[in-house]
Length: 371
Image (cartoon, rainbow, N blue to C red; front, side, top):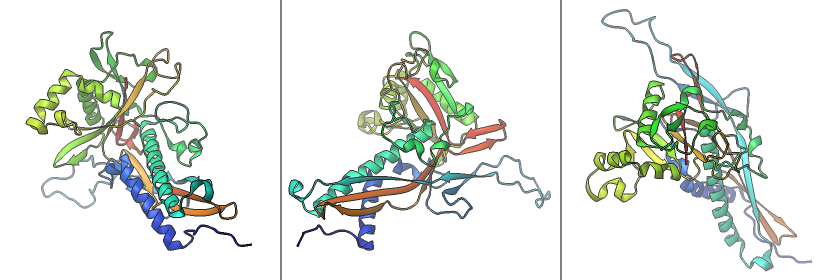
C-alpha cells in the first residue's frame, strides 16, 4: 500500500545546519550571552574539554591576584618567585532537551518546512530562556527546584541536573541585606538573612555605594573597562524602579552622566553610576510568585529580591557546542517530531581567601532587599 511521508532531515549535514540555526537564534535571545567571555568577564565561558578522569565534568581555572610585595633593587629574583594561586574546580556537565510534535498532515495543513521553522523558533526561545533562568539561580544560590519568582518548579527534572548539587548559598562576605528604619530611611547593610528582611528595606543609592565598598574591601575582583574598575549589577525591575525613585540616585545619574537628551535618565538606556552598570531583568530572583508564608521576613510574607553585584568570573559556564537537532516520524509518517538537546554546565566559582581564611564566592555578591 502506497503512503506519503514527510521528508526528514536525516542527513548529518542538514542536522548540523538546523542545530546551528537554533543555537544562533538562542544566543541572540539569551540575556546572559552579552556577558560571555574569558577570565576577565562576568561569565567565564569554557568551550573546550580538559582531559581528566571524570568524563562528565570539565576543569575550570580560577586564578586569584598576586598578594606578595615582590623584590626591590638588585636583590635576588630567582628563588623568590611568587606562586600563582591557581584554583582548579570541576564543573559537571549535563544535558537538557525539549521536543515538539505536530498533530498530523490533515489538521496542520502545513509543510514540513513550515513546521521546522516554527520548531526552530520555539525551541530556540525555550533554550535561551532556560539557560537564563539557570544562570540567575546559580548566581543567586537558589536551588533549581524553584522558579526565578520563588514559586516551586513543577514537572521539572532541573533539580536532578548533574550540576544542581553545586548550587550553593552566598558566602558570608558576599551576602548582605538592605536595612531601613520604620519610615524607610536607609540605615546600612547587614549580614544576609532573608527572614530579617522588612517591607521597608528597599534599595537606595546609599545601599549601592555601601555594596561597592563591601565588594572592594572583601577582595571581589572588578571588571576592567577603559582603564576603570567596574561592577555589573543584575537587578529586578522593581528594585530598579526603587533606585530611579530615589533622589540621590536621580542626582547621581543626571549630574554624573552626559548633559542633554543623551543622558541615560532621559533615553532609558543602561545606567552606570559610581562604577556600577545596572542591568534590570525579570529573571533576577524574587519572591513574587511564592505563596504567602514562603516569602521573606519574620512572617514569611515580605516580597523581596536578590540584586547581584558581579565582577570577574562570577559564573563559570561550560558550553560544549551547539544543541543537537533530531527528527522522527509517528503514525506512519503522518506526524513529525523534533527534539533539541544542549550539553552544558554551570557553577558559581569559589576560592580560598587567604585574607579571611575561608572559602568565598569569587566574583558575585548578593544584596537582598524588599520590593
